[in-house]
Length: 127
Image 1: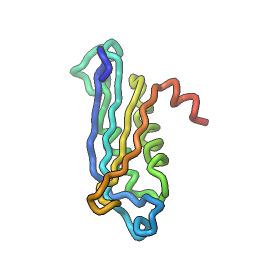
Image 2 (image 1 turned 45 degrees about the horizontal axis):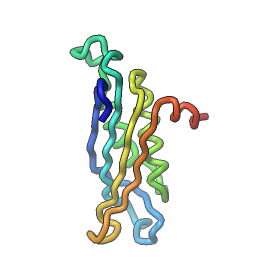
Image 3 (image 1 turned 60 degrees about the horizontal axis):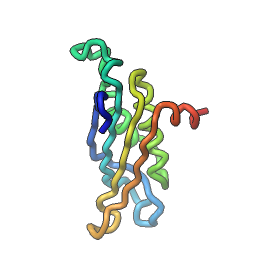
Image 4 (image 1 turned 45 degrees about the vertical axis):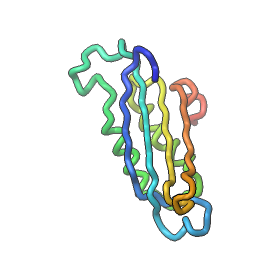
């Protein structure tokens, strides 16, 4: 949580072609995605205007678009795609994304990958 910041969050379960385990290469699997996008409260002059707030639909649609991707071994690649969408929202200054694969170990464990970064960090790593 960031004080004096709005946080738009999205939780979604998608069917993603991902993983390096041979069993994961036979088709999509459920991936639980959580994304937070933070914007300073003073960056939103009118919190009643959808054009001025953090539009969580941008985030949701970016998460859903991942289902169209070819198989990718690493969740990190998918996280970076969603991070790009979050930082396309001009007022967002930081973001957090996590992805969990609840079925990969048959209920015995849930592997997860997450990333938290600021706009400045994101800008430094983008081409």
